[in-house]
Amino acid sequence: FFKTGDQDGREESTTSPSACQQSVRASRCNDGALKRIYAGGQAETEATLEDYAMLIRGLLSLHRATREAKWLESAVALTGRAGELFLDAPGKGYFFTQRSDDMLVRIKNGDDSAIPGANAVMLHNLTDLFDLTGDAAWRDQAETLRGYFLNGNPRVLVGFSTMMHAALRLEEK
Image (cartoon, rainbow, N blue to C red; front, side):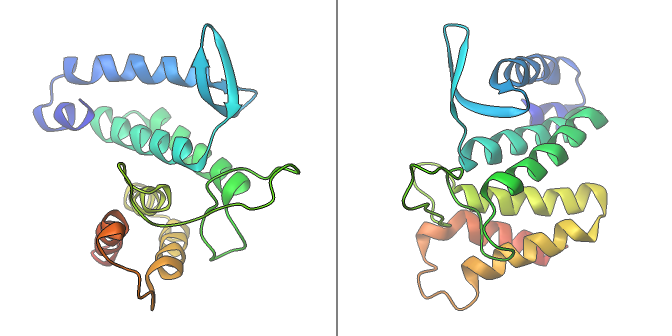
């Protein structure tokens, strides 16, 4: 819907997604913390990087379709929050889960599964933020993330297709 509205210029193509996005933002964020599950009027279970990455992607698409600054501002804020919650030492990629005293190991990878990998989606998001804002800090973060997963990695095969696509987009910027 977002991309269609952007292409055809018809407001009705973006109205429903905008209302859906407002509902998601209202129901899944408690005190600024995104939750993974919302059912029966209750939000529970801490969100993962995947939740943040996909929501940011949607916000960026909605911004492109509607040209409303609030969606870009929300994407910037959520990207910052994702960094606080999931980013390993600078240049080391994002973990899939938040820190927890109960968790012995935190995983981070760039592989796709049935859906695009969260680190790859974050690379797309950082590239889009650079494209939309012109802020070189976003490009720097994107290049660092790309470098961590792709530079000299012999495992870069089909499982990294979304990461490769994002890296190619970054090269064009």
